[in-house]
Image (cartoon, rainbow over all chains, first blue to last red; front, side, top):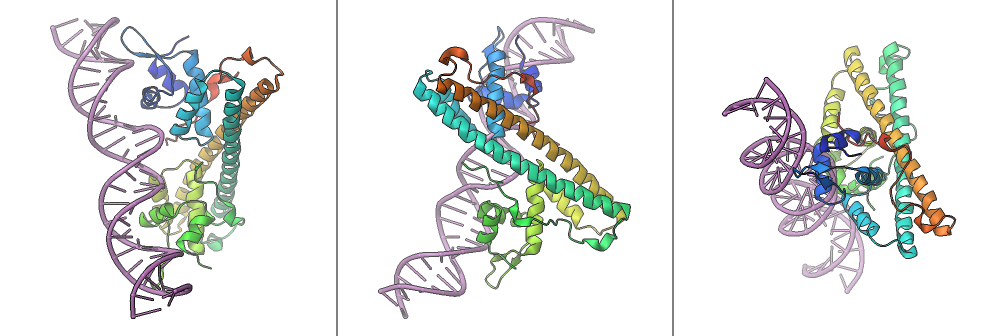
Length: 147
Length: 147
DNA sequence: ATAGTTAGTTCGTGTAACTCGAAGTCAATC
DNA sequence: GATTGACTTCGAGTTACACGAACTAACTAT
């Protein structure tokens, strides 16, 4: 099974520009047809999966490039260990992103509840003049995606 | 209670550059001391909370600017409704981010399991020559943060 | 008193990861 | 045979910071 640029981009909900960019910087493999147009296959799908996930962990394009390089090495026990360490590290970051996402959802849920009450007239309009307030305040963090 | 630029940046785990940027583009309020230095207070804290959360929902700086403008309007029922709509919209996006974060964690967990087995010798090294493979494949999405 | 350190200031340029437009190619269609 | 559509490359633009340079003002050590 093969896919055109357009199809492939649609499958991952990203723009064609992005896919083109990924192929240009050599982190996403693709074939070319007789008219020099990009053709994507199962291998491309797998790689795009990986890229999407690494990005989901907060990895930079440079991180991903590095990983791609490592993946082209022979499958020795030593290299396996290296890959494993990277995967472990990125998984940790994935869990961090998850907990941040949870915190954000909680905050937004609180906000919605708050507005609902005001708009229902359940509590008077002047009960909370500050638009952004929360109880457990200085716990919001993990925002910067540094290594 | 007030905070210096350095303290404030540390509280939210971002750089001083970022905080300076936010004050410069007028989405984060701050006072100035006798030496013209930024001073942050409770109000700044609340706003920074909001900014962090909106960013967590995937909002752009322009979105946040827009929201800030709206927040400066009088607290009429009509404006409340507008704010509420925005909050609802952003909450939806927060849930999307959450589900994507979950998918990423799942993927990484699978990866880790896979490598563990290989490295333990539980399954032979050649069991899966493809580094990135998953069962439920074309479901990974939600990557682009467009409105 | 002079020198250095610390913590800030403004201003302007640099960077990452796209994002887009211009100009062109090629095959299919009206 | 002109238009349409989906692609190509190349280069420039954009967002959200990141950072260095040059400066200032207060403290601190010699």
